[in-house]
Length: 306
Image (cartoon, rainbow, N blue to C red):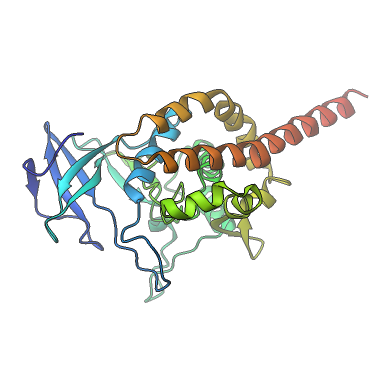
């Protein structure tokens, strides 16, 4: 694994965390994420969140499915805070040659008349912006991007795709297009220790309780979305995304498992846990949803023929 300790570092340009640093490597600029300290007040055997593996593998799963995602690689580096070697993830920054700027989607939901910045995580508000914003030209493409990302987030167990960690690229002439997917560090159970994973793998019922009953960060119709519930009766645009993306997930499953198995520095227990949790959500949430969507479409088509 590459050691970044003695590479070219620049002053930190990323606010909100001392665990991010700016790297220049082979002529490109990267945001390097160190494993974040666990902030939970609950007792835990973990000293650090394993978010660097989640970030790297999550982005690569999107790419395996044909969805553009941030380029990442894992490396080692001496943490300047405590002088200990850590496994880190380097994330290549977008638009390094002046071809545009990343605009987080939350920027489209700012209420200029309110002294407090308003952020919302309801599906209704996202759809309202996509329907009515005069800035967005290809609304259908962006809407498809949102729902395709939603399906994959359900697959990888990402409960934190809030409005600051996805966005659009604005070109110099003011046009917007979907940015590559980024910020997957909350997917694939980064807070679970290997000891906890061993316990869960020994009991399929408890594993299902942990990895099936997952929430999205979004609310719809006033309620927090449970992935397994919304996929039973998806809205029209999610229905279409299921038909676009779930067949890709099924076709890419062996490739995704092989990528996980080949991830250097990730423990064997974590590899097994990731693969089993992905298979669980694929087989018990996504494939049944695809079957139901296809059957509904066939029924509608037969009804139209009569």
